Length: 90
Image (cartoon, rainbow, N blue to C red):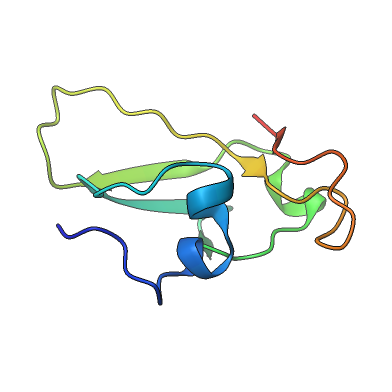
């Protein structure tokens, strides 16, 4: 996999740079809530959607490896005044 380019949602949303350093993804992950709501990078989620834990599917890589998935909000309560920035949801 290649390093994230400038058109990637995590770069456009300033997650890469503000929250995490630039990185090269090692696996693809699919995150789904309620078996029908697939999450995409940069996708806004409503609190009522994320009250239950998601199903996470990992594609590629060594399945004996360990992975970490976090849900964070980099601009709480909003982009114009993110005084609670990088709020860890779970």
